[in-house]
Image (cartoon, rainbow, N blue to C red; front, side, top):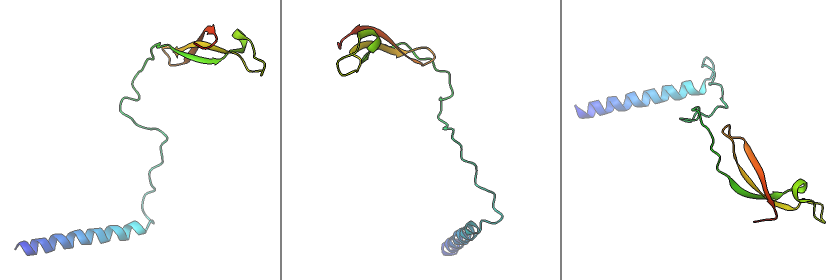
Length: 99
């Protein structure tokens, strides 16, 4: 009895896999694949997010505030950079020279 059930299960599985592979190779009559989406669905990505101002020191060239060196590049200055509530980057001048 167990052998008969096992043989029936094997034939059913084998038959369905053969039918699938035969229909898989024939693309006529199959619906087209779904269109690719450029949207990445991540849980919580669409939720409202507000950036906080967390300033960090950053050294950048500052020709307007500190002048230009002999090589034509702006002299280094320290800026305080962070993000606004709308997540835009803002850098405020602090002083000339590196820290």
